[in-house]
Length: 378
Image (tube, rainbow, N blue to C red):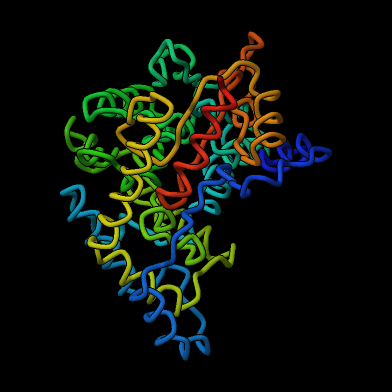
């Protein structure tokens, strides 16, 4: 298998021979990892359940975690799931990599489509599945929303959307998601929405594909799947707690496949994750911090505050040169957009001339870094 180097490896190579300006405190705005302490009540739950390490965890997850995740979906999206319609996962990275391999294994000429730019695991899964890839380009001209080409979609077995979107911060409305549900049913492809940023919204809650499925009358969630994670909402990426939910008939076979993977979450982690999924107060506190960071970015860089995520997708002249200059002169790291995208069949890379800025620090550190970015731009 020939996997592309990860974006952060490419960034390290780009900056390898550059000495940053030591007059500034280092600021890394590259990775989507919240730089806040995991809430104390979650850490206590982890410690209090450490004795459970002596037991093997179930592949299907413990009932306390499954119940907490079903409650989250019900509370947040007003969607009631049966126990057969949700599977706890070891974060979402593993499921994004192994689900396409499971689903596409016996497809003749497997074809997958996903948004471009993208989370690189989508590409890795396509390579591991020996699948043809169709890029759904996100550009300023289409408001960073995937355009619908029914001829191309009709050949797909699996389509992966990612809304709220990393890295562009764009969102889809309930109605727009509903159109994608209709397309999946019309052409009989499985539609998976990566919703890991659904809880980092700045004003009103953003919709889920599950809601959109009900909205257009697909009450059994046929061909519909969503994934979500605790990493962003609870500042707890180390807990590796996520889920996949939706079409029961697909998940029934997928859970059998997962038995062989051996990726069950340790019981102490499941107990801590269960209390995290059950609480909304700490999530609201985190959202308020990210919103303040966006307000600072609006004031300093003049950007429009997006509806969700903690990313700025900023157009700059020559992103690679800008990234090097910003690091050399101002000791700030950002990620060139072209590292997060691929050139399509026409040679067009929708990430070119953009940088991704992750606003994951406290507001004081964020303001300092943003001011340096502004000075570099001018």
